[in-house]
Image (cartoon, rainbow over the protein chains, first blue to last red):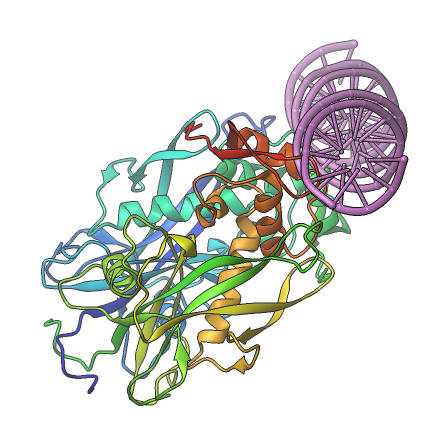
Length: 239
Length: 239
DNA sequence: AGAATAGTGTCTGTAAGACATTATTGA
DNA sequence: TCAATAATGTCTTACAGACACTATTCT
């Protein structure tokens, strides 16, 4: 049987690029606040023209799925060597795309947005606001632009983003992949804030949890009217 | 941009159908032993003609991915309403299939093989033998037919099967999906044997682990020269 | 001194592992 | 009574949560 004997679906690779942003508080005595961010692209063409969507595109016949995701990310952010993992393949809605049958494999990329020097002009970071159940489970999300105006995502990308956050939440306590979002050196407080953004609730013994995965650099940051904190880095001791 | 402006990959859905078989021991005083089983199909056509492979097939333009998997399973086993979950999408090897570019989404199905009355003639159950690290992690697998002769699988299906076992192992301690492999009623011993087959090592407090997920039926099975055991069933108390 | 956060130590309850003890049956 | 497994109970240890306490800095 020939591979061309039947009508084929199209296949795309989409990437949920997640990072966080630090917002300085008005009161200099109060420590900073973090916000979850997602990278979106403004669509140039129909369908969903001018709406914001996850970066992604059709998978070339001679490109791997992960290549397709990585190439798009490189193109829009200039980033190489990024942490990426496959999330899920969305192929159960025949009408995700009004143009025809499209199956999409979604990836999660975790990056530090401050490492990006030249973002593509059609690309921007948006703030993710989550609604949670008592357990921390993500029940709904809202996306806001820099003017705190709510933004609707194209296709089913809102669902994909929600799934990505749930996947991360499920893995955060037994992996250290979230550290890919942090800069080379960071304080434990900063790491804890990011962890709790994703986990959805307080992590009381965070210091104990993270201590085996990081090591002190000997450098301290201070100057805020309270005790300076040690800067740590990821320890690359593969277990 | 038209969806037909580029050369498309083909897309298949493959299913790792897992079950277990009970083998009576010679000594009637010894309790039974279980073996992990996987459902395979003998390929009728090239490539890999006459080799055994995971059930699967090309995804029709107007069928969902999960439908494609379920339909194939129904066709070969007659089974409906089976537990199924998406495993992973294999799209990073451009030459998985010598005929051309094929992306495959693999599903895991957990069934009780004794519920199947009429298996398709090209279909059979094979025994899975696993090699494990100290932690229980699956490092390698071998497949054997009913004559205990080793069988090689077509394509990269051996890797897919390994991934499926690892996925199950990772979820077994905090979900009860493995109970889908057991009959309507079962003893705790039988459930424990199946759990340990997948987990790869002993689960010392299994009774405590499982007790919240099952309930006694009041029926006992005996007649082997030792204390009869209670038959349990899944309790459908959705938490 | 006071405010704020960094960092360490301690207490406690829960859960997991190890293992002992009792129960039940057929030969 | 013995062999084998079922089922329950007990003891101990590891770990997570709560929280107290000390350390450090700037105003």
